[in-house]
Image (tube, rainbow, N blue to C red; front, top):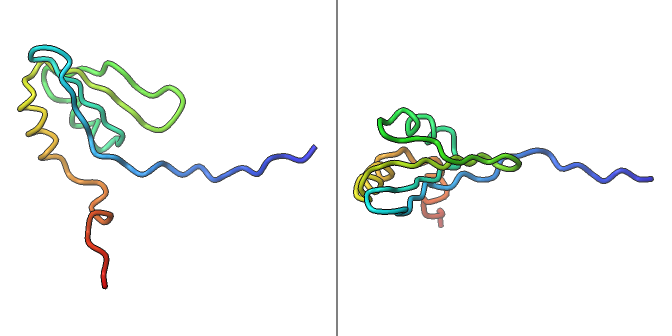
Length: 90
């Protein structure tokens, strides 16, 4: 029997972190890049509540902080896909 062709294991493109409100002064932040997850894990009051078991990198953190904190935190993170956001050369 012919073996199926195996595709090379390439990571999916990184997506920026997202957040949502989970209750009053309780938010969740989802990251798909270790460069974003590592500093977030060191923030006081933030805990890891979910992760990918079989698939691309995924971490979900819970924080007992107001939504404004999440907006400001994500805005300060370094962008991992800047080159895709630049306009194309003519």
